[in-house]
Figure 1 (cartoon, rainbow, N blue to C red):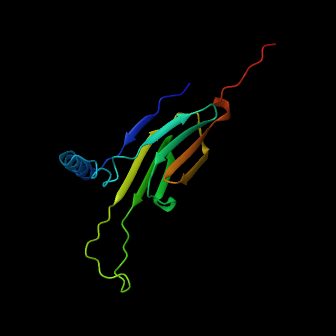
Figure 2 (spheres, rainbow, N blue to C red):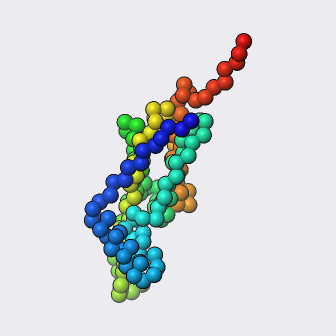
Figure 3 (tube, rainbow, N blue to C red):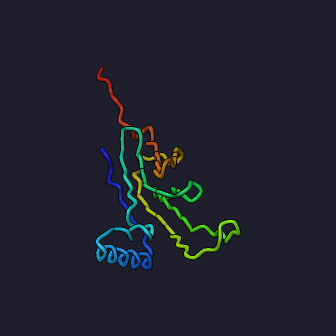
Amino acid sequence: MALPTIVRRNVDPLELAQREFDNMLGRFFGARAFEGGTGLAPWGVDVREDADHIYVEAELPGFKKEEVDINLENQTLTISAQHKSETEEKSPSKGEWLLRERHYSRFQRSFTLPPTVDPQSVQAKLHDGLLTVTLNKREESKPRRITVS
């Protein structure tokens, strides 16, 4: 039986205002083209469980593993990622910039984990924009079969 997982989102008020403005423009123009520019809206997180593990899967398209930070402290798992625009200057071979738009993206989610998680054996892998965090359960909390004598 799975224990409930509490999900908390840390949202910057300025980013929330930007997201609401972008959503309003998207509704006005009949498209979702503006959604995602602030890095808050479209990325989802799934949490699943089996007898031995809890899996947290987060969509982080465009992020490199160097930009992802995972922290486990006091039974709270925090996943955060920051992607800043490139700071490439003009190059004579590429010409001068006439227009250059880059977005700053930030992602952060926190989860309170059940006491059955072993904090010493956590694994994380980022592949094709999908971050998978595997949390092993403590041996004493795993279900075991008792034989009747």
